[in-house]
Length: 300
Image (cartoon, rainbow, N blue to C red; front, side, top):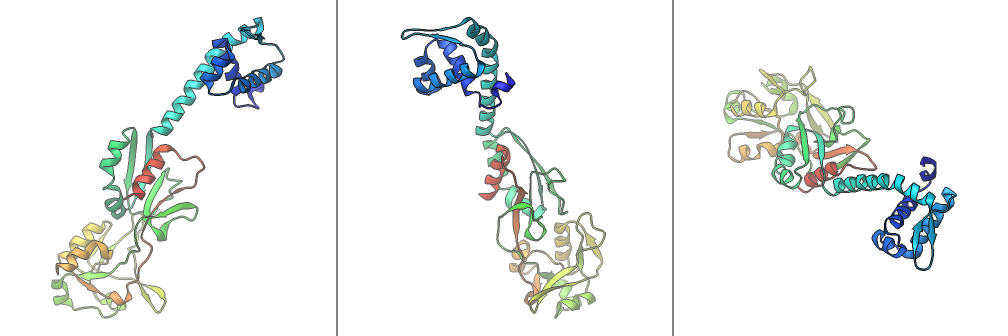
C-alpha cells in the first residue's frame, strides 16, 4: 500500500472509500465536494493502480466486488484516522498553540513585550511565551530561541530582522550635584578624568567602552569610575544620586532631563545608531504560535 500511495496525495483512496461508504457516486461526490465525473476518474485510476476491479457499476446502482469489499474494510479505518489527523493539524493552524521561546534585551521587553502580554494571553490561551530577559548577545539558533528583540548592531546576518522603532542615541548625563563638584567635560576624551558609572555586558569581563562620533567615524573612550554594574536601571539610579556620569540611551532619561534631575553632556559627539529589531531564523513553514507572536510585536 505504501508503494501505491507514494505518488499521490491519497485522493484516489479517499474517493474509493467514499463511494464504498455511500454506494453512490453522486452522494460521495457531494460529500467530497467534487463532480461525479471527477470522482469516477479518481476511482477508475485507483482500480488501474491496484490492478483489480473494486466496484460493480450499472446505470442504477454501485456495489463493491469481493476484492473491493475486502479492501474497503481494511482501509476505511486508516483513511478515517488520517482524515482526523489532518483535521487536527488544520485546527492547530487556525488556533495557535505551543511554546514560543524569546530572548529580549530588558529595554526592548519594556517597550515591545510588556504592552502586548495581556492581549496576547487572552487571544492565544494555548500559547506559552517563554521569555528570557538578558542584555547578553546570544546565538538565537544555538540557544534554542524562536525569536529575539535586540538593537540592530548585534543581529546575526542570517536572521530575518524587522525594525520595531526609530534609531537610538546614547548620551552622557550627570546629576547637577555631581557637576557642581566635578565640573563638565568639554570633549569625550575628558571623561578619563571623571568618575563614570560603567556598564558591563552580561558574559563579558570588561566594562563597555563608551562610543562617540566625530568627523565621520566612531571612536571609543575607556572610562573609569567607582561603580561597575550589569544592570542599566541600577546605573541610572546611581547617576541620579550623583555618584558619577552615566551613559544611557537618551529616550530612557528624557523625563529626568526635562525635570532637571539630569543634565545632558557632550551631545555634539553623540550620534544615532540602529534601534530595536525583532529577529528570527528564516523558515519556510513558520509555526502558527510564532507567527502570532511576531504579528503581535510588530503591531506595538
